[in-house]
Length: 113
Image 1 (cartoon, rainbow, N blue to C red):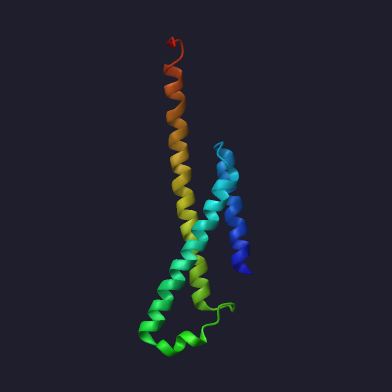
Image 2 (cartoon, one colour):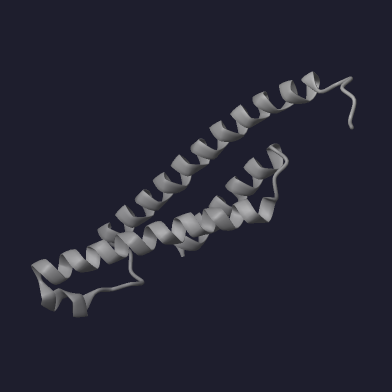
């Protein structure tokens, strides 16, 4: 249930970023969902490999729906990945915005052939 709330928040977070910079909102919202789910998938995969190597019998007793320390760590890592890529995109869009108008201003008054 907490994962669903995180997905909704991530979607809206990225959609607001896209709206601020004039990008397509739903594409960046889906990017946020992909980042979250991808991070969860990789964390679960690595945790499963770790369990298989250290205690193979424990794999049969994994509770996928409960609240545990492993789930909490997975959520925190996913939130950190979503936030980190958000900041990366925000900085890239800011640099893109600063670079864009200067090129257009230089082209004013030039004849098109």
